[in-house]
Image 1 (spheres, rainbow, N blue to C red):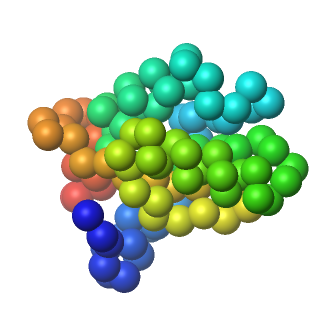
Image 2: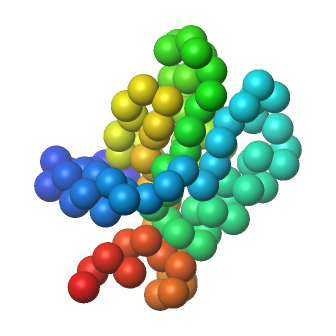
Length: 103
C-alpha cells in the first residue's frame, strides 16, 4: 500500500493533535513493545510513536524496524516523532483515529 500525497496530508492533519502512544526507549524493540504496537495499531490504525534515542540514524532504524515488523506504513517522521498507519480489517469506530476524525 502506498499513500498518495493527498492521503499523506490528510493523515498528517489527523495525527497533528495525537499524543504518542508508543515510546521506544533504550531497550529498543522489545517483545512487550511489539505487543503494545500491535494493540495500538489494531485499536487506532493511525498512531504516533516517539523514539527516545538522540541519534538520528538509530531513530530511523527503529522506525523502519517497527513498520516492517507490524506491516505499518510510515506517514511522516519529524525529529523523535513518527506517524504510522495500518488499516484494521474491522476498525472500531470508538477507537480508530481515522473514523473518529471523519466528521
